[in-house]
Length: 305
Image 1 (tube, rainbow, N blue to C red):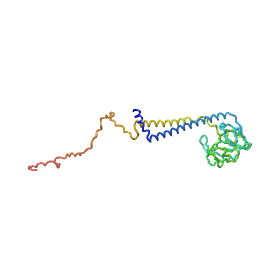
Image 2: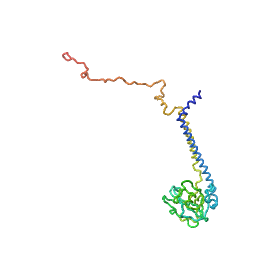
Image 3: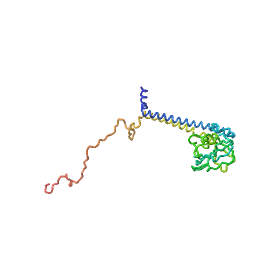
Image 4: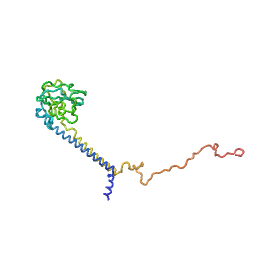
């Protein structure tokens, strides 16, 4: 009997309002779980990237032909490998990478110049960042690379993807050897190189790239944060359900009983009701007797009124 009564007290959970509320919490819980897993996945990816960078930065520079090949994508374990190449810059085929900022958030562009090697294959070299807020910046506006034969070293980078790699008027928003090779109509190595050094040095060097930070970023705490939001949503559902079972539906609850100055009113004491007045008060007139219309007439000296 007690179990039946207890179950009956929770019957309101089967109402349409509470069923929809419960389904919403399920969706929110799944979303927060998925977002937490996504952040932890990004954390694992960052750990793998950091391990590859640490392993590759300790190796001696390799010949570009040992790491890259025309038309082949960069292998995951070869990114950030240091390579060296010798050739001549083709300044006329400079490609500007727009919407780049430096560490201080200043606007600028990157200059990607093909380095044509002895066999005619070009290595795309991101020579660095040039500060400018001119949206019409072209390759001729950027400080020129060294003339003649140049030997470079740099970090291997994988191609970008998506619509941002489209090349228009020798400018793009992300570097892709496939898109740039097609736009320049020349054979290029897969991937590109972030310049580390040039020999000989240019008259005016650009701001060169650096290795990324090797920390793990905020992904771990972001993942915990999303999971906490999911637990908070479930706890909130439980509290609201308990509150309605105990006190009834909000908006339909009785107002709290009035209390007197010395505590609660006794249960058998009723409030005093004063009925409305049904009569009217007649003003009292305090006029002098001689001036009153209702006063008796005084006899005169002859005895007549």
